[in-house]
Length: 185
View 1 (spheres, rainbow, N blue to C red):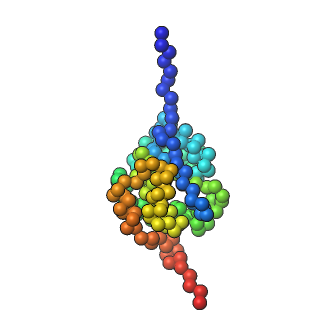
View 2 (tube, one colour):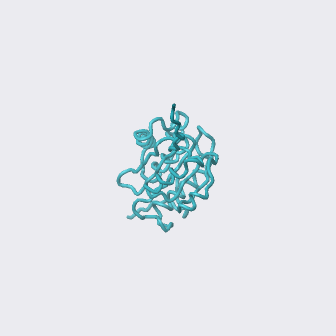
């Protein structure tokens, strides 16, 4: 006689925390939750004080459970294996700026806040957005940003995305449109 057990519900792959030292930036890179395991992802998000989840792939769960958990969902889908279009790039950088840099958000500047970002496998689109935030707000070289992400999330960022990131030039100026530069003479 064999004993059958119900299949366990688990997180697809362990979420990866990217928290560069000497910056307020804190990101959780994940694969896509499903309705059946979303509660486990919410538990992980709570552990890291996630205030926002950015979904860059097609929906695999309803947003209501996130909202009930006090987490905002931002839809920023773009094509798998590619670089983000300007609209997604600008919305992402605005969110990062609001949460960690400008203080425009009620949670900005508070220790420990985190933005979670996920695509299907957590290896392409989501890590690319985190790399862009590191380039723009932590003044990292693109290769340095990718190396940091790959140190903790093996297999992240494909060759096409890497080539795009290597040629990416910092350009974010924030909502104010200023250059962010000040010269004192």
